[in-house]
Image 1 (tube, rainbow, N blue to C red):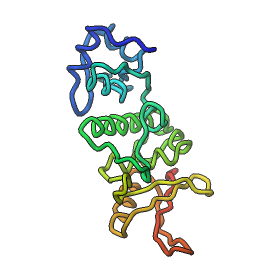
Image 2: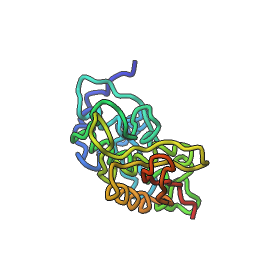
Image 3: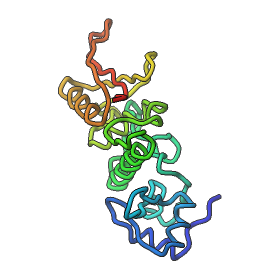
Image 4: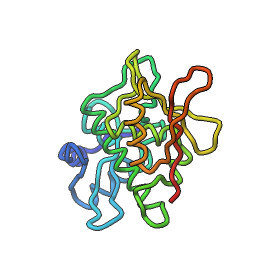
Length: 210
């Protein structure tokens, strides 16, 4: 079981910016939080430190022990998982979830910056191509779209037989078009199609390469 942060580390976490998760502390404290997966160091000057999703959870709950994560944890389905829609339980949309999604999306943008050959953040990286459903769902959730959950209408993201493509379903044409705009802005190529049997409209989205 992971040990809880020390009192000094806890003070650094509690003093973090509530939206961006930016933290300040001694070099030793910051390095310790990075090693424990509760923070990450921005790769570019001035190299500020920010809480990871696990760090935000420690900030929100005193009793819960932190779970290690990394800058790429946003969509792994382990410590953090984007809402893909279609679950029976209502999706968490509270302030803590909003901060967690924001942190996850910022982490994913940094992952793009660090792993895309030209440092571009306007198109998906290799990690997203390996986690298509979670990557597309995170882009939608980070933009404020509502997933289908607990009987309430919303988007659903599903895998498809096609390589590097996911299907996005929505309850109406307006929502579907809004999802298309969001994904295009996030660096995805999007087309709208009709299911042969049900005649329902859906999106087919693939990560843009250039």
